[in-house]
Image (cartoon, rainbow, N blue to C red; front, top):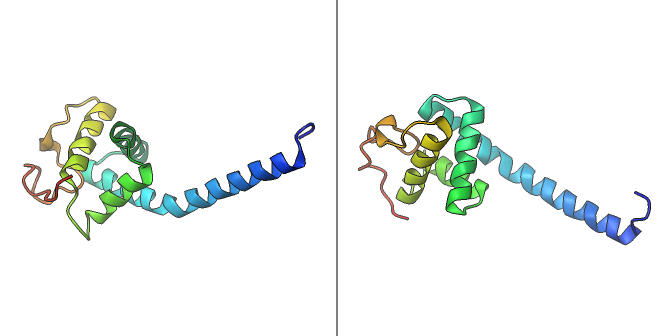
Amino acid sequence: MRGVPRDELVGELRKEVRQLRQAMETRPVIDQACGIMMASWRCDADTAWEILVDTSQRTNTKLHAVAALVVDSTHTRPMPSWLRSALLVSHGRVTGTAGSEDGGGPGDADGGDGRGSGGSG
């Protein structure tokens, strides 16, 4: 990279290394959340990814935080109702179907009627 001062180049490389490390740390939980979405909605990996990204963007919540809440809802605590609603809307937006609760989905241990998600948001 001609013309770029060495200190600037080193700073850019350090920033890139930090970003790569963060991606490596957060990727496993995102992949787990995608798997949960795939199993819950019988969708492919690309659709699950799009649902998570749409939910993250619409709720202004970091993607890894959304993913962690989805994963936690399988074994630690109920999914927050705001997230469950946002995921349903995102599922409808991504798949072109209504975001109705009859489709079940993540955090849906109660069969999809919306009364068993517990927690609030």
